[in-house]
Amino acid sequence: CMFMTRLLFERFVAKPCAMGLKIQANRPKRAQPSAILEKVFTAITKHPDEKRLEGLSKQLDWDVRSIQRWFRQRRNQEKPSILKRFCESMWRFTFFLYICTYG
Image (cartoon, rainbow, N blue to C red; front, top):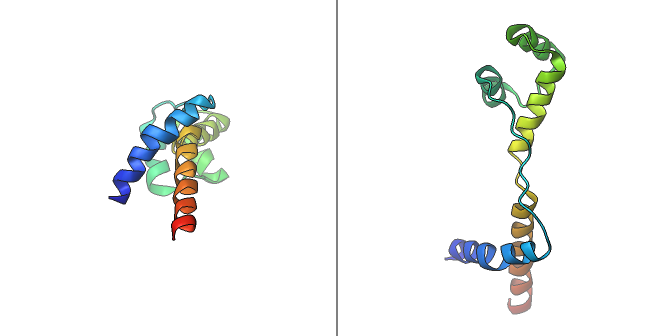
């Protein structure tokens, strides 16, 4: 029941408010597909050290800076958008205001 209330609130109240405030659902730039880097990212680490970067650089024939950029872009893909964060914050504010007011 509470989950459905939250979904309805975020969709029909918070999102229109965000659109009225010109908050957009900007998604970060997507990292170019690479099976090896994706496997390292999901299975081993999201923040590779210099030694691992050097190894990946030789394995893929990319420069270290490109691999660092790929990992940064891939980490940013997992972050929620500003619109999503706004809707969640508005729900929390409304929920706690209601709880504190009506007990």
